[in-house]
Image (tube, rainbow, N blue to C red; front, side, top):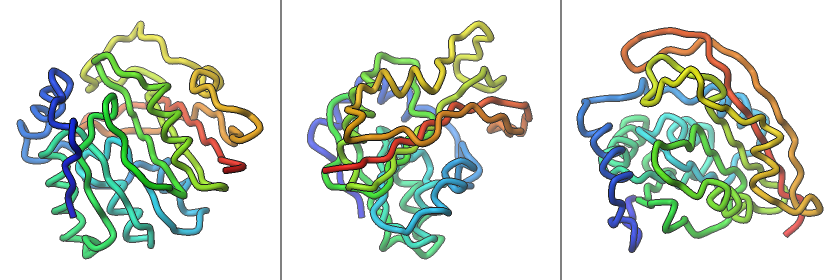
Length: 217
């Protein structure tokens, strides 16, 4: 099922960038889930999940295959079509709904037991703390927000700047500005892993991981 949200079509330069990234190649990613998403979700009871910046659906399809009902969101229509096709091929199309959003303008409605924000980073101006605050507010009581950011430069990145600043997980959590009486950070970490880029390059990379639990309504 696909929904195009009013206002999402006026995406401008950022929308063009991501649409060109996906439409310019037959496939950008391998289709596997992000390792930290799989690691985190395996310990959770399936429920309703929101996947922000779903790309070609690797995370969304994995979640659906493990019993979750998933709302998969991206700014790129091509990415959303590939997510829907991936879900259909995997036999989980009935558990994946795609929605087009420019998250700087619109945000999905509903309440979610898990919000997945993997590498929600962009070369364009983007109100990320506000978007992540909305994500935290979209959680059900007891729900979990998983944020995974790039914590080091990757050789295949669109901005491979070795001098780039990568904030500490504690700083990212603080910047979101959540009430500690209602939300509790549970993991603030910077693990390393071997990663493979879209053209098969490999490198040791650092991820910045933040998980935040909603405590009360």
